[in-house]
Length: 192
Image (tube, rainbow, N blue to C red):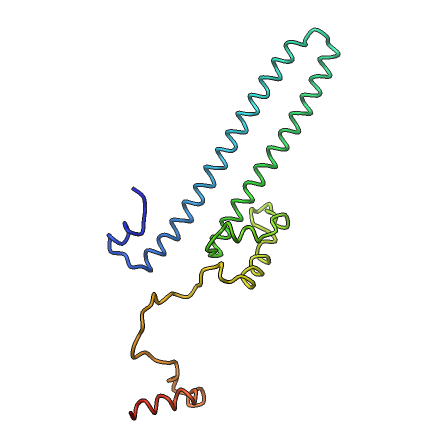
């Protein structure tokens, strides 16, 4: 059974509680998805490497007659294997960086992670030895400044409710802080 808003609503949770639960659940699911994708990618890469090694060994068996030629072929295969290994590690590092950026965008409350990610200069963002993104915060602040509509507000939304009889934050007890215009309107309304 999937954890949905309707399921939580059926169990008596308020909208605020549901939003909080779904946010935390989303973080957990996102982390698990990134782990699964990383492991799947690693598995596929290892399968490909094993397949390449098998082909290389078959080629060596066929050319084992000439020793000097065999030594050259072994050297070439070793160089090819080093290059393939470096490319694979670079691919995994790039994938891990992308997952970290997507997680950071969700934490920054991006409404559409893909849209905001397209505005980032990914080549200027690096992942440090501690696993933290470097160069991300400054870019995200600039994007928030120019494109605030792409991010959710931290303020709780009223959902179209009108509250009657509330304070206008004009009654602070300090006469010097009262807004004179609001005070005059309030006086007129009280006498009518």
